[in-house]
Image (cartoon, rainbow, N blue to C red; front, top):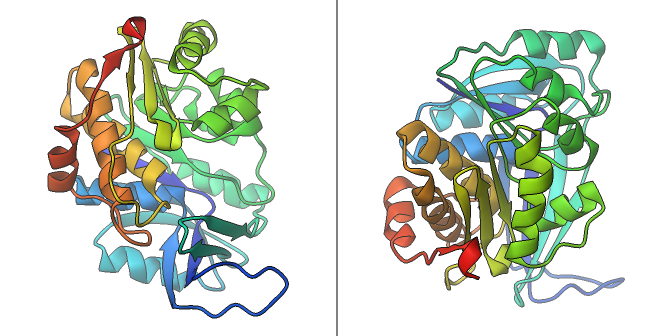
Length: 307
């Protein structure tokens, strides 16, 4: 069974405009509203890839019906913990140049009782995979992901940053997927090259008990570090239509590769294929299995030692 945790869901308002006129009037060409959040995106992409994940996490009373309706519409199973407050609203401004500006609300504050109920709602067995992805709402201690990982019988995959990521490392998750900015800012680094990234992952993360680290580098590609070796892949040259969800698609592709029993050397092409397929779609639309497979055939992969 695959479980995906979404602790801080959001409503994404997306606006398309020619260019952002700071301090003046802006006329919008197009807008849309989507239920989002990293965990929700991962669950949605896993559904597109042919899996049947269970979404767990918080849902907020004031407007949580929107999340339930959307998950039911997409036939994504859910066992959400009710909490007081409302789902946060994030605003994304897309300019014709491709630049995106984000305004993200922090989210509601949850109580200790609600956090305990959430932890009790997450089952686990040795064959299960649990994805912990995204930010926390208010009231959550930075070590919550580490607490959930500690002793979890199945495989855990974490996509987080800052103290939440640093603390989670001590719980030895199976895999983590920070982007390069998150990795550098979380550990006070200034890594740039694939070789530098791989060396840090080996010395500080794999040695701490993490089995796999995927570091996305945006338009520069991604690095995969494992006990079996390290690889780098440049990003595929596709027309970018939507950036939200690219990293979440990569997490979903990691789950796909793990659950499908792929050889480790085949993980990164699947991950990069999923990312390229998702950024080729407008808005928050995410890739499906056929799109990922088609593009992963074009992914170039180089052993780190060969660079």
